[in-house]
Every structure is written in structure tokens, then in C-alpha cells.
Length: 234
Ligand SMILES: [Zn+2]
Image (cartoon, rainbow, N blue to C red; front, side, top):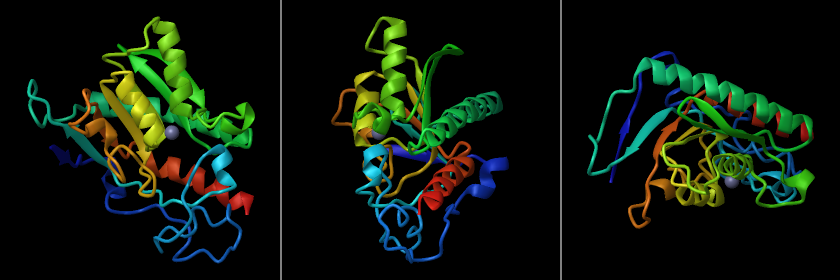
């Protein structure tokens, strides 16, 4: 069980609005180009990363913002987010966006991630499956690996992962394995997102750990980066 809480404020304008590039079905027959352009038609190829581009099955990227707190018995279901938390979320997400731009410059799908704990940066990474010829080299996985190495512990209780796009099923699984306290993401991925859109792995009560999810932070910037990247590849 979980509750959603919409947060008012300057990002509220993004609510209930999807950042889409094309209207309707993509005209391109090109698999890559069709990625983000078929968004509103709901029939486009899914957005995948790295090698996924070639078999890209396109994705709708949504900038709708929401906070999802997974219910836990030991804490109140809903707690107002402080403005200082919201501003630090935006600050770290902008840093993740810089990593995403670095990925784009290297020809990778622009996604960036970082892991924070107690105000300290533990690990950061740009998406890199193509360069590393590694299907698991998503930004989240690389950032978690670096953070865990730095902490000397594969579990990272109390840590927060910031990532510019909603995590996929693999990364959401790693989030549970690492026992992260929180995940903050930018754009939603209604085609493949596993933190509430298609699956809700960090919120699934059948698993032995749940993480709090905050969605939609700097979502428009994140979605725009992805859209620009795929548009240029057409
Ligand atoms: Zn992933």
C-alpha cells in the first residue's frame, strides 16, 4: 500500500503534463528515431539505454511530479516535504543532469545518477553501457557500485539515489539490494519504469525492503535531454 502526495510549488506546472516531442505516432521508420517521438500515441518503441538504442522500443517520458511514500509501520504515512529537502533534491538532480549530458557527449543515452548520504556524495556516474559493452552499466548501477566501494559495504542504508530517469527493473532491484532509503528521479518512464510506472519494485511489499520514491524533480530538463538526444540520432 502506498500513498501519493502531490507537492505544490514551482514544479507544479509540470504536473499532469507530459513532456513530449512529437504529437502522435512518429513518422520515422527508423527504430532509434521513433524512440521518443511516438510518446503520445502510446505505441512507440521503448526507451532503452545503450545497446538498447538499436532495439529501442521507445518510451514515453513523463515529467509529472509526485511523491510516493511507501507505507511503513514505523513512520507516518505522509509527511510534508520540507522546502530545504526539495531544494537540495533539485540541486543534486542538476548535478545528475550534468552527468547525463556527459553521457550524451559520449554517445550514450543521457542518464546520470549519484548516491548521497548525510550530505556527502558517495558515488556518481554517467550511463555507459555502450562504451563498457556492459548491459548492466546503467548510471544507477555504476553509481551504486562506486558508493558501495567507498562505503566498504554493499548495503547503503540511509542513502539516497538521484537519477535523471525513472529506474528500470534491473536498477530498481539493485536499489532494493542496497537497502537505499530513498530514490529521487527526474522524468518518469511509463514504458519501462520500475519505480511506480510499470512496476513498483522499491514499493513491493513482497520484498524485504522498501525505499521512498520522489518523482518529477527537474523532470522537464531530463526529458528534454533525452528527446534532444534521440532527435539528433534520427
Ligand atoms: Zn537501469
